[in-house]
Amino acid sequence: MMRAAWRGPALLLGFVAGFGGCGSPKDVAGPRASEAVIDAALLAKAWPVRLSSDAERAPFEADPGWTHIFERRYPLALMEFNRSGNAAGRARVHQELAAVYRQGALIAANATHHVYGADRAPTDPLALQYIVGVSRAMRGDAAAAQVALAEATLVPAVAAQAAAWSTWLEGGHIWPPDRAWLEARTGPMGPVDPTTQPLLMAMPHHQLEERTAQGATVDANDPTALLALSEWHLAAARKAAGKGAADLPLLMNTWRLPVESAVTGSLGAGADAWLFGRGALCPEDLSFLADVDASGPGAVSAWADRSPLAAALAPAWDGSKLNHEKVLDQSVLLMRQAQVAMVQATGGEAGFHRPFALFVRLGVLRAGMQVADKAGQYRDAGILRLEALERMEGGKGSVQRDPAFALSVAAWDAGNRSPLRPEDILHNLVTDFPALAAARTPLEALHLRLNRHAAPSTPVH
Image (cartoon, rainbow, N blue to C red):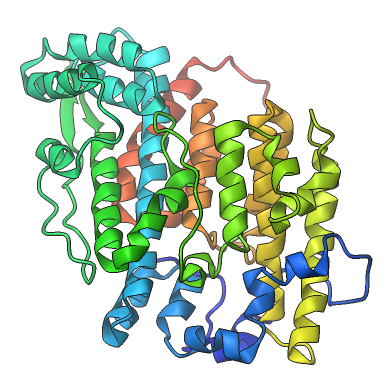
């Protein structure tokens, strides 16, 4: 699905050719001896270091599906995993797609909340309050959701759907709604089969008339469809993963909606299939990040002796505040330490060291972002978030390696009433993930409304 900025060969053995040009020399310097950022034994647990060993890397080189996972080409990965019968690989594809569409749902919810909620116009179709209600529910404001849904029940076209959501919210259920319940709102997506993809809902979901004499038509999309799509892929991941399905709540913790509760825990056996090509470097990193969400930034100190990411952040955390500039430094230094460790493991430099090391840097940046968010450091978290997004780009005009993270940045921007960067991100991704067009519609509406209400500017001469 993803159009990567590079084209690697069929097997991971071709990393030298496929990834030798990733990252700039400034950002990914060659390995050199330097002061250790964290204990070497702790870094040795990180997948980029462990998989530098030919023997450890062999299972990933044996199946071309993992090359496509590394490059986020999900249809090709699924095709290869189907050919090889690799159930763990199929589970990974569907888990990542579940994360993509959950973040898409959040973009749609945030944009809708602003354009048809906070920035509501008298001419907006009343039926849009159904979509506002769903969006507010996903954002975690059930009371405000019920207010909007009550208005929507007055409109025959959406009354039944609004009433269904209202009743579900009144029941005090644990999020998310059951997949079958969601599909009753959006239409069937087909049997859950890990070897296939689901059916997509035709768009626009609704065409509604404005309350004007002209009766202009407004296209509207329901974020319920994106949540249902995410749940379909999660169900497929569970079916493919078997006993490993117990890991899915922890893996999805980073990508949950604001209304969903944080999850803690640890990965079971077979963790490498979940970790490969990610910023979480070992199982303890995922547990640490989940603990940050559940208990706060103090988890940095609690996990610094077990999690490489927590250890890297420890010098930047003074017990009450995270120094974002120190995090930026630590991300580069740990990346270089990892490169040195990889050279030592392989007996020389290899082309895959650079892209592997970049995930180390990204892991520190994103972990720092998460800690800063929980510490209430909005500006610092934003700096780290955007730095991570920039580091993920393989070159001018490229799309992001991790679409779920790129979409999470877009959701953050949309929540801040800023549609420009989200529109760019979706423009890069919607061809490969067509269902994301459901999120693009409210973003474009928000952009137009903000422009319409903006104060006149002085022309630049």
